[in-house]
Image 1: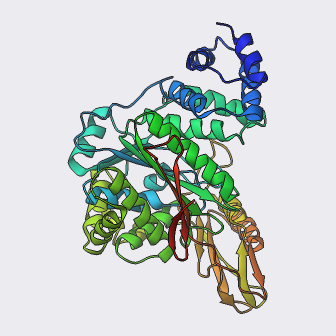
Image 2 (image 1 turned 120 degrees about the vertical axis):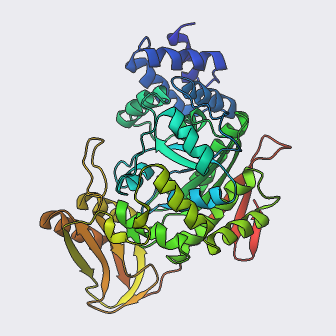
Image 3 (image 1 turned 45 degrees about the horizontal axis):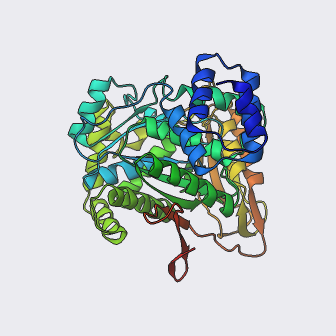
Length: 455
């Protein structure tokens, strides 16, 4: 088998076999296939696409290119949840204890944030003492005893993905649904869970800007998971506005605590309940999504999820007293208010602009080596669709120094648009993608004002 023949075949738009894809992944990971040939194949894939079978073969080859987690010795059905990234998305901090309180084992590896997309590991490490680095033995023990453990990704987890992503980033081949899907799902499959829930964001603050592209990505990922024998489903959720009222690591931990206490923003609570219900349903702990929602709601209202959250923090060395005493979380040195300069309706929010502001404030990373300020970020006081008068406080920014606060505040103010017409508030949910056992095509169920209907 020769790489030249594989390149020529894909250049002509033909489908590659599983063996050809495995040969490429194995050779590039080991260094035998050079970057220039790998880049040529990536471009051919970007132009011609891949079939479902090709995409599944690429994902599985990448998943097995390095370490894989064996969770079979941990009792119960193991569930994972992944978000494609957004601004203010702290749902894992809420969803994981909700699902665990319903009897689902959540034993997962998560990543750090890059750019304006926050990482679960960064949020957890803002809790004093919380350790995201655990030995495999301790990871299994915590998951088995508590029903919940989240650690940082192994350095050798899906190394093929790391190499290929670095090439995609500099060869204009990032925006390819088969390549995006295989990148995400290779790490999820290597993580070893039995079922996977995907939160695919759509809108101006998401990687996928249109609903059509978001549905296509979700369908591809669900097909991959199903092909690999994992129960997989996806929700398409809105990212035309920040999720919740807080952006930044410690600020988001504090907001997650409020939701688990039965308080907090409605949008964050609603999305968290739906994602947790899907995990409970896929894990076989409920006979329907309706029953799963009821179970999750009950665990939120009776305090079981909050108790599970407290146990989880303590089990990984963190200080659970931050739940009642958020002042123990890191705080930035400088704060500055962002005010309305005219009366009107908040008619749109450039969510990506909000994300850029958070990076300038120190809550996100410009590069992988950038150092975070865990107390930095943004707290909103007004949301999309609100009326404001001139001088009203829209938000407050938190930063390590005056210059960062000033720069972040300026970018944030430009991201919040005030007009004379009240905006139509976008829905929180757009669609649910599930496996179709009678067809290779996935079920796509749209959320509508009159209920849910199949597309």
